[in-house]
Length: 382
Ligand SMILES: NC(=O)c1ccc[n+]([C@@H]2O[C@H](COP(=O)([O-])OP(=O)(O)OC[C@H]3O[C@@H](n4cnc5c(N)ncnc54)[C@H](O)[C@@H]3O)[C@@H](O)[C@H]2O)c1
Image 1: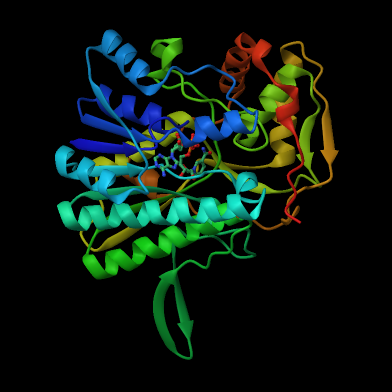
Image 2: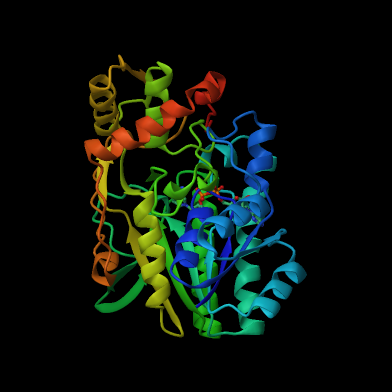
């Protein structure tokens, strides 16, 4: 297959490129370095230094003999994106290239506006480029479980059959976001659903939970191939953040009561899910939605797991319940379905002590780079 990965400099994008390349596919990665620049601007740079994309593609070639093509540019610029589609002629596009942080989207009006325009125009441009160049090209889009919010009913995989006044129909599962970032992801799904109905595009929308870890078969080949690993309040995901906090001797930042429950997955499983979706594409005119998680935990459960793993390694991990800067339910019902990807062939890597030890040991290597100021700033939703 010929695959374009949008957002190749990202936590998920770079490992995905290598994953496809290693399995013999032709890969073009695109990024505009938004995340690197934003992290620098906000003084919350990733824990592990990552060479730029041209350098990383060279390292990949040196080690594997395989080529990953790189193009630096902004997918909001339609002519740029269109020309990439025209010259590369992809069979599938993996779309990660978005502003991915809820706190970032809540920092100011300008950052909220950037998030909405960056994410929505990017998605709109991709749908249009595919319609112009090759409507058969499969879009694999990263959504988020946060689109559903925390409803007091079971969360289905994307769709819900509703009976109303004696008649039935199937609709997108009700969505209710808890940040402007999550709202932009809901609107992405709506846009794609419109283009699927109107232009018969093929789309897989992956409702992903927070990802943890940094090890994949490919990132483990060389330290220079590791992706960005954020532990700060703005770009870090919760488990990665808690492990860095444990190593830094910083009490784990549990927001409020800590009963917030979400579905999680290992970075290795993101690779599998995206790959399995690519090799078994959606049909023309189908918006296929999967819930991309492998197990659920409350924040308290995660904090306890990190505390136990850290203490076993000789740390004295403390947990601190702090005032919740977000507006969200701290105790709630949560029961998402997630069988679709298992049916495609996903073999989950669960959160074991071994996996946690692996993340601890990597973080320990870079502990000198931890910026305590970046761990918690209390970006408020109010
Ligand atoms: N990491 C997670 O836990 C997680 C969970 C659920 C969903 N997601 C979704 O997965 C996707 C990837 O997440 P990530 O953690 O790898 O984020 P990331 O920020 O590390 O990667 C996204 C990349 O996209 C690039 N980008 C953003 N806007 C762009 C534009 N207009 N043009 C070109 N490049 C652009 C950024 O520079 C960045 O390198 C995002 O859409 C995110 O919403 C991530």
